[in-house]
Amino acid sequence: MAVREAEPIAVEEARRRCFEWASPREVVRVPLVEAVGCYLARGPELPEDVPPFDRSLKDGYAVRAADTAGASDGTPVSLIVIEEVAAGGWPTRTVEPGTAVRTMTGAPVAPGADAVVPLENVRLPEGSAGREGDRIELVIPARAGDEIQRRGDDLPKGSSPVGAGERLGPREAAVLATAGVLEVEVVRRLRVAVLSTGDELLSGPGPLRPGQIRNSNGPMLAAMMRMEGWDVRDLGQCSDRVESVVQAVHGALESGDVVVTTGAVSVGDYDVVPHAMERLGMKLLFQKVAIRPGKPMTVGVKDDRIWFALPGNPASTFVTAHLFLLPTLRKMAGARVWDALRTIAVLKGRPSEGPIPLTRYWRARVWLEAGRAVVDAGREQLSAAISSFLGANALVEVPPGEDPRVGEAVAVWWLDVPPAPIGY
Image 1 (cartoon, one colour):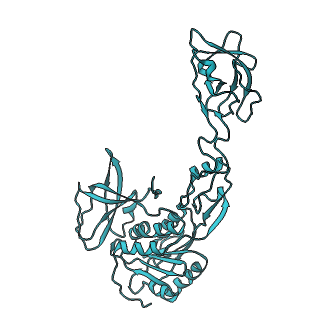
Image 2 (cartoon, helix red, strand yellow):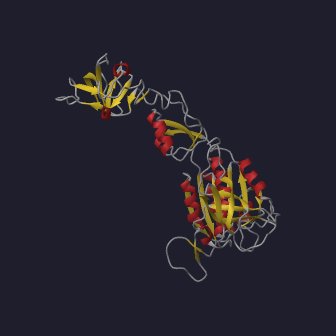
Image 3 (tube, rainbow, N blue to C red):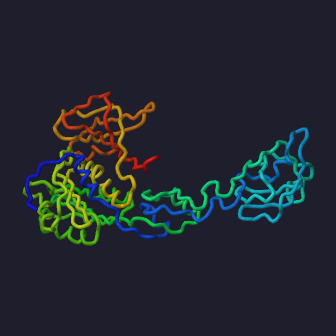
């Protein structure tokens, strides 16, 4: 490929090319606790009913509802307690007419019983402790099914409550574990390498030399990737030399799935990333996008590896990572729905800038107010302004040539809301 000045393509076309190329990595079978953060390749069928038996929802007495008919303060129903069953125990007696089994929360309901009467609805005659061999009095009639959770009512055996393409989190792990699922098939974790280019950068501790700045893009991208649950290799920083970039990226492309670089991606004297891509035989999906911030963004692929070359300005990295990098990688990781949530909000604040022929993405704060989404983008929007995304949880999309005013409806991408499966 020749490195030359390229015409920027539209945002949606660039995103389409990324998503069209992306496909899930290979499927692995792993223990449930090791799969948290991964996406299911197949929704497991539950091997057990949940609950595995009819169980009591309250501390009380398992009874026959028919025995309690007509119970009241004036005419209590007297029953004899024939057994006590705690959680983890198992009843050995059957509830016959005129009998009851003292049953704790979570304990199995004795055969013959069709209701549990809570302790607060039971009266103890003089001399009774309500234990085995004692009598109890019921002053409120019970109905069949009261305070009982039937076997399989929550999660029936053979069902698949968590489907393919859904991400395993604490809630999903709890659901699968309680039904006896010990292993799951997931798309393996992505292996992502992050590299920051620039002789002006300092990674790690130490005093700044004149002209130096500290590396912020590397830690930001590594944090994004780790929060997604992927395996991240932070390559640190390298100089603005083609050979340095080639050497740093070559090994990462051989051993990983994704390389993400920041900086040196335009066509200036020190923008060496396009030359490094050429040296490594990358095929370009695109070079330059009609977007602000982030116009020089370039993406190359080779076999089943992908290289995201993001601009060096922090806000450019922030915006392009959310619009291109994260959705593409989520699809590679096996997500059924990979893109951020997009909605309409009322613009409550905006920066002081006019329309341009590029699609703009304002860093902003969105929230719900009186049942509707409102968004405030009244902050500095310079590409180099790292403070512009502090506290930002949204991007306001401004189409080319448009200039929305306060009070108008705008398209908003929610950044802190993970993609929800269709139908949620």
